[in-house]
Length: 71
Image: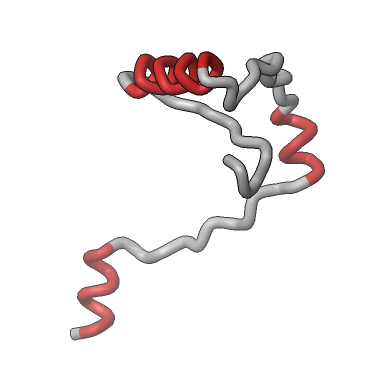
């Protein structure tokens, strides 16, 4: 923390309680201050895919046809 200045803590599932404990200890010792949490904005997937379409999928032949072609 001394090297970078800003550190963001995050956790999922069972790790949330451990992360909260660590953050409370850091705040108590004066190493951290609580900032406003980041709020996710809803994503408009229609617009996102219109601007950045996913790459086309490669169509592979069925496994049986591939084995016949090899033999």
